Length: 305
Picture (tube, rainbow, N blue to C red):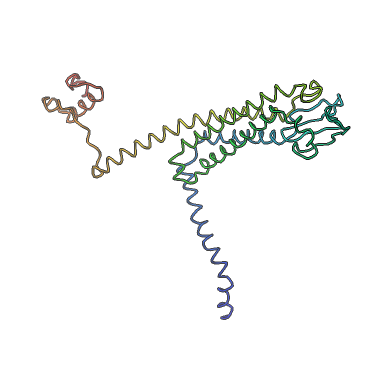
């Protein structure tokens, strides 16, 4: 037993070296997180706005990755089936300007070697502009959700509490940029997809659910952006009020911890003592200063009894 007890620390030395700091961090970190959320919870309005923005993000990602922006009607038996931002699907399609009788079959990535000979036709300038705007919108969304996660998790605490209204304003600005890019991409694609210089027989096609998911996501982003903008002004007001209170506390601390003395109207010394109310002259002086009057004699004594 003695040998076993002596050998057990050596076998568990590596475990204890890792487990003790981990258990200590967990035991300390959990109460700290609990206190953090109890004393400094994230604004409820911002939480709701983040949920709305996250739902819009899900719709946007599904629209961004799915190949159903434009779909051909089934009863037309068209060689073109469907397409998205990054994928085209054909069923025996022949490119008219290609000198060889080659049929494109199946769904492929838009930059696949299968479509190399028709890249110039598949990627007109307006379609590449649509892809660019959608990519910029996605990057703005990722940056917005990253900044929102800082406010929601309150980490790092000092940074978030110091720059909270600026972070919320950044989220609102990023959502506004997303909305602008999404608007341009939807307008450009919605107008130019019917061009006869692109797909043959455009009247056989229709805008499908991937396109409308992008439209719906824009509505979610707009609503979330207005909520965050409203919360930014509220957070800024809270920050200003907190700074004012801190300024007053600092002034009280400079006076030895005693409350600040309210300055008395100079005309108070010239007024004769009236009545038995010891606080009359002081109240009258303060009220006259708050009202912007130069002399306290403008008010009668009966008003303060």
